[in-house]
Image 1: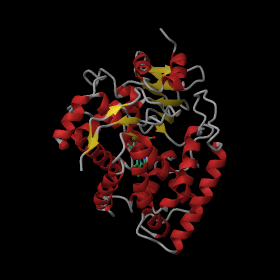
Image 2 (image 1 turned 45 degrees about the vertical axis):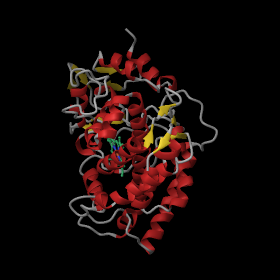
Image 3 (image 1 turned 180 degrees about the horizontal axis):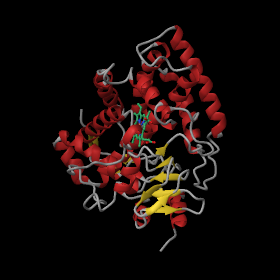
Length: 402
Ligand code: HEM
């Protein structure tokens, strides 16, 4: 049997990005493995799920990998009670109970943005679904939501790509010369965000960053460094993942023409379909950010206190002990409790927004783009093994429905 270390190196290797799933199958044979470097990797559904809910697991104490995006003290990297305080403050202008209508109020604007992007396919016979659709759509949504001028998008596109593409995640890939080094990108983006919060403080709009900069709720206001740290998190978590879910969605539909036809004929299918997509092709493949606060026994192995742990969401999502026929995409799979948004106290903050965006994007694509076909399968992938998705997705088509 291949050793766990060889498997993990193979998973990080860019050559495996198009199809890491056979490697995850091998990894699950040993639900808990200790790598040579002392890091533990957990890959089976019930075990990952239980650790996501376990208060003895910390997201705070594990030092971020070199080049990991952003300052480390966003609420993603905090434990209770600090985590809960900051998450409450950031939730206040985003969702219930204080702002229950924020995401829903964006629905019509989002539908218009999707329509506009697909209208622009007119007259072409092929598009890059990443560059022409999956990327610009969520970007326009989060710029509007957070109060980031859309014209600044190319700058933070370069910063986020540099943070993610050139992050040291053990891929062995040479740094992309078109990108900045991760540390420079982090400094420049931090300066930009601090200035943006100053502007919003002086002249607030109806966006989330203005609310965070000015609003004094029951938990008080975030300090300027906290604002910047959490803005990094929101901007990066808020767009790369959704881009990948939409691109993975189009790719999966084109590989499963029955599902595409069913979605076209029954748009309501999109609700379970997007959940199945989050199981089948999760944009966050694993969480490399946990550390044990105590000895924890998992499947007969004691993970000692202070150990670093990787939680393999994508492997867990295809665990045959949880999901029947896990390698099949079943758009209306019953009981699809995937781990694509994580679970427990760090459960994805932006899940309602990501769901709405992806549902709109996939139903419109299915309805309007006639006879779409993949130009290359598999498509080229981004280097990052954690935030996995196609770099480009060339799709040809015959015509466009209005
Ligand atoms: C398809 C899109 C998305 C996926 C697959 C996704 C996935 C995830 C996952 C797996 C986590 C858990 C991380 C952990 O436990 O360490 C998470 C947390 C988070 N996500 Fe998302 N996300 C998506 C979209 C978004 C969007 C649109 C936003 C912002 C509007 C967002 C903001 C966050 C934040 C702030 C956290 C940290 C929550 C906490 O630590 O309490 N995400 N996301």
